[in-house]
Length: 74
Image (cartoon, rainbow, N blue to C red; front, side, top):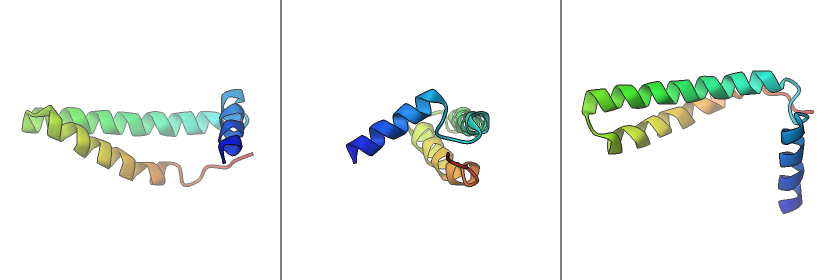
């Protein structure tokens, strides 16, 4: 199991894990922007950061399966 993990990390660092690495980077950046915007909006709305951070992390995590559903691996 650990060997598979190391192999995947090596392929990822070389840029050979995904067929379209730029698409993966763009989708990841889009997810980060969504999470950050939700966090800022909730912080301004509620005024407390300790509520906004877990809620925005949950929503950002829920968006990821939709962003990465069409990934193609090498």
